[in-house]
Image (tube, rainbow, N blue to C red; front, side, top):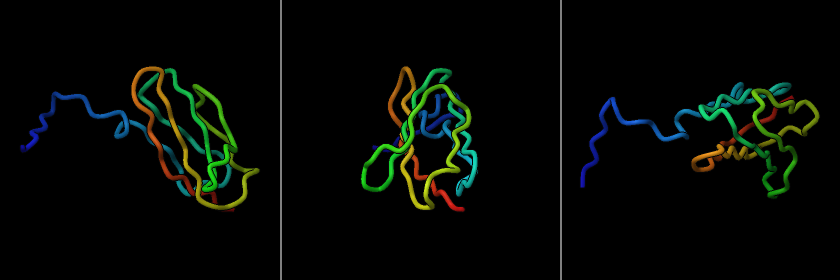
Length: 88
């Protein structure tokens, strides 16, 4: 079982999703190849602190500093969960 990757195969969505800057203090930018997607930001207790959809930027200015999990769900495809640090 070796897996061969060629330059013609599409990359999984996770590798085509970027969140920056990380750590963030004001705006957090989401680059997702999917045109339509939803997102939710959760603290480490699992509590949802932000949610939205199809937005390229999210304000984290009012959130306490700490580690959060950003869940991005494209209209078609699998969810991606990324760690985001908010630092003021």
